[in-house]
Length: 202
Length: 253
Image (cartoon, rainbow over all chains, first blue to last red; front, side):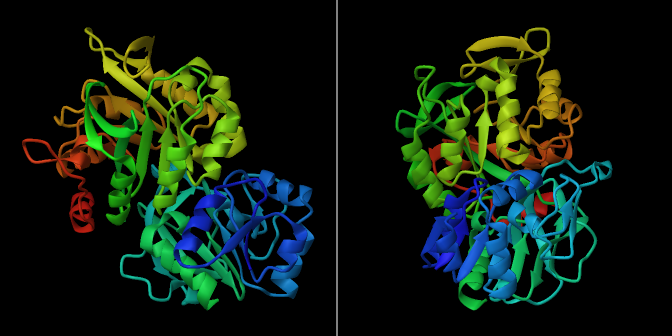
């Protein structure tokens, strides 16, 4: 069973809608037993970094997520804040992340004339082949909404996005653990193919 | 690469989609769900859906229609209309919407906007302002579908919203609405130079060159339009349309 983790943040219905469209049933849950039996987990989320980690802690889900991702090694994908929580830290808060990726988050530099939050479709460049990008049509672009992004280019980087010339890493993969900064569930065919790949190929 | 959102804006009332001219003279366009389906097939960048039904102050948003729309859309949707408390936003987001646009409540109760930003994050909260130029050339914010002049200066109001942490401003020009005579570039420029937030410009677009002007001259981050995407030809036949990717790319390069 695919579990969309409900920790009180974010727009879970639209992920479920798109999974349904690609023919997969999923359950929105914060129930530990359900999560323990999950075959795949999606960690969504929109909001602040510290709130995200605190909510996971309050629901007592961190240990079980670590077990599923690091010991059992089932495919886990973070979306937007969900991906950010999989990193070490964020300039947005003081809490420590899950540290599944050796990555940190910094704020967009507004000095470059960029408006923040970055709320836009951005074209992307594949940095490292991944099953996530199989069968993608040309002109792969995704809808992004965020003020913080991955700093530098961690070794897990697989995709880069372009915000009016400002390039940043927008997807990470460490074996079974994946994270995307953008919203595949809101990115038309590109997002649908990506989610399809996650549920069927990884 | 430069890339800007081009957004159909849909006005909903009386169970249907309508298009106005200067916030008046509403013309029936068609069925909302059907229109949203077509826009989804055309892979539009985003949809702004505003429920402008005038109802009692305390009535809830129409969750049924919001849910139907969200289920049809695999793109970002911004919903606006009759939002006055946190519980309503929670409900709207749970249906599959990711942004809410707040209009009158932002003016009457900025504290509410602050708590909404704290609860849902900046990127979820859009404040929309309806602006009209007065006889002396001064811009003022109107509420109640353009009926009530608040006399508030839109630029200082937007700065206040930026400080509170709002993620985006939706700027509507009442004078330009439905006229298809081009955007009010002066208004857009004044607003984009007052704040560092993304500004979605709306009101007056009739073709892709208008879109280009709002972005290149006005410095808007995104352009919204209604008439342009629902009317076709000089007799304004109702036909849902949207520029293709090649056309869009050509104007933003």
